[in-house]
Length: 139
Image 1 (cartoon, one colour):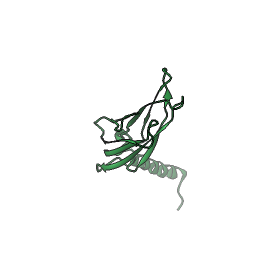
Image 2 (cartoon, rainbow, N blue to C red):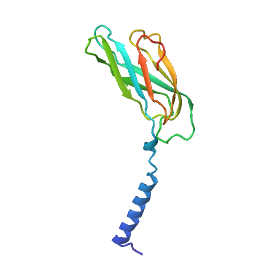
Image 3 (cartoon, helix red, strand yellow):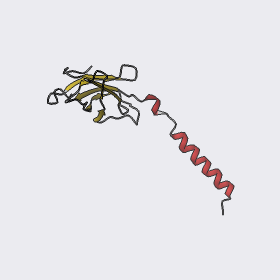
Image 4 (cartoon, one colour):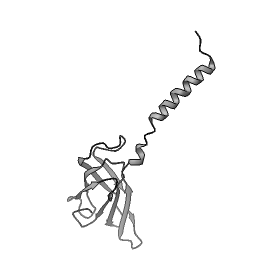
């Protein structure tokens, strides 16, 4: 019993269509991204990049399957302002699961004492995490 080329093409089309349909629940539409902003000052005339660590504290159930549920670190590249003293930078996080997250950054003016805060991240609420050099808590 031999399959014809036409029958093989039909079977292949059905398999491809089923595979594509299975991927079509569009989790990406429900992804939550945070925006991390850092305001600092120059250190010996240059701006130092800042690493911001995010640690999940209490996550809500039923997050999209591609949402990050683990601790992660994101680099914020700082650029010197026109005044030659200020340094600012902003970056979007990886997709995050909804819930409570703790954010920590060692800012250039006092790297031994990290600045931190805990924020509730949700699809509807604000997703901005802002660090300002000289302040011990982020906003």
